[in-house]
Image 1 (cartoon, rainbow, N blue to C red):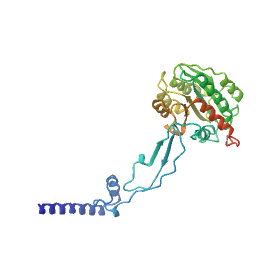
Image 2 (cartoon, rainbow, N blue to C red):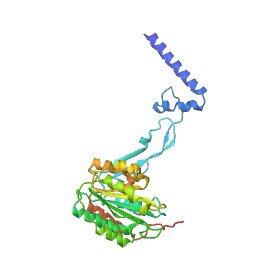
Image 3 (cartoon, one colour):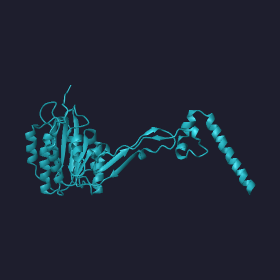
Image 4 (spheres, rainbow, N blue to C red):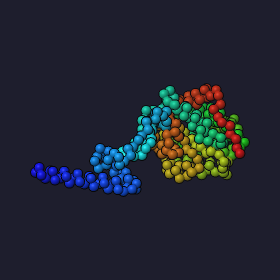
Length: 325
């Protein structure tokens, strides 16, 4: 038995020597072929010697981000030298859910102002902005009034303002429940006083939540040059909703097939953090499925409070001047 063990040990040692010698004799292409093997083996394994391979080098983890979307914080790291033992891309990002987003314990106001109101992605271009308002029965009358109050104040907070000039922003408004109504188009009067008057006159519909139908009207009718959409502007759609769609055409299909090709899509979800299905739906329709395009609040009083908060601390103008060539 001892002789058999010795014979097996010698044979295994010879096989390792042959493999190591083969690696020494081949060119760099062979090293690339060994990468999948390399990533699964320890450098202590005699089949892969330290001098034959480059060890993976990773950066330190970044600082945790501020909360985004439905209260997620994120940190990342990078591969500095790609070599043996490097992790998959999924292991380069860590995300933690810190629960619901409120005006007091999150940066939602900073996010809403920095990402949406000031148009951080293209601060030098005018915008065609569509507001899509949920008016379904799950929203109480008093909450709908809070939504209106917040929107009326918000009109004055957009960088660039609203007006008839080429460098001005334009606003359109859709209200929906079981049915969809176009309240204001880009071709309509863009004086801020007119926009505010339209908002004040809104009446709560009640009914179902046919969000897909509203987004279909947005894609086909609102973002249409016949109705005032301009070809040189940034297009943004903000969906303000408190729940999951429950009627009409498929929301995800409509947004991904039609609306996303014309406009960036944002969502302000109120009270959605406790509904996994509603959260998943909103996450699936915002642009790039990116949490920075989602603003989440616990209740409509928080929406009004958030807008008041932004207005009160806007002592200096954070906007860049819009200059068209």
